[in-house]
Length: 481
Image (cartoon, rainbow, N blue to C red; front, side, top):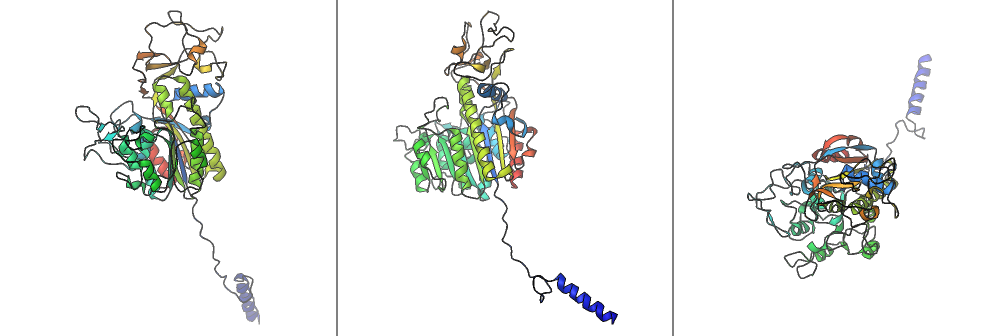
């Protein structure tokens, strides 16, 4: 009697354990669940061309004063990057950006090629003729870029710059050439379905914004720098790209357009200080539009954004334009962070990296009294060094005042220094003084470490002192490539 009761109780227990709403079911029926796809990952790589630590510091004071913060200053992970190239203590933009994009330490003037690639022949002559490549066969091999690697994995891609889109920094993301000056060849590598197209770009870079129309127009066009009759703008349109030549065109671009190319100036885009907002979009606007376009594809994306004209203003020793370009770059970083927080809260699937390719010979002079930000009536960091106690201009050995900002070399080297005024030196066309004289625009890069900051997915690995080639691997690791 006891045994039969135990068996009945055990049977009931098993039935209840397997019950799923039916007394006839002993085993739970499998439940079909929808496949959960991993979230799309995104990388936004910001490059301030020539944006060394001194430039960042001066731009901070220029915009918000000594106690303020740029968006750059709020990035949670920070470090420093060594920038020397394979053959030079002081790099140019081509191998430095290529190091970030490929992990290869290349020679100066070489774009995304192997370390044994030479930009010049034995006599020192460059392997280009004008804007046309004459690179000899067998001179190195292409090195895969982050953009190409992510494109091959199905990610969408974009390149944004305030320089010519064929200039060294943007070119290092999508092209391979032994000398950076071969911009007609670089333009052909970017143009889908045409002769010379870089097949590793598959169906082409999805979003392209910058200047440099002159390398895409046939030689019959007055603005062209090409030596042939190819119309690469027409070739882009034939490949299905929407084209924008000015702000009005840009503003009309649909956020769901399959592919877009915007070339807003025949040469570099206009300095932000001089930009006509009705003709050319700002770097922040181009960045925001690019993110909208790439996000709409739902594939994850790689986007490179360059503040390229920081470098050009520094080469000219034109501090006001250099600082304004840096502020415009910082504005673009803020737009990107704000937009990505909306679509990817906490940036769990998005890595934002901000860095520079090299610095310049810019410096901050003297024991200057705090200036606060630059306004229409106060020159701020652009003005003269003032004594902390008296507020009066400090004097050099010949009793002449001098500026807070100076350069190690540049065109404004005075044989005899004279009197200067705040308003004079804060003018948008004033060229800061230099120790070593150069030709116009001939101020050089510097070789010191540059800033790197990061936020989001995998950002915790971007810290300390890194070589620029190491950043490549850290970005790949973050994406899981």
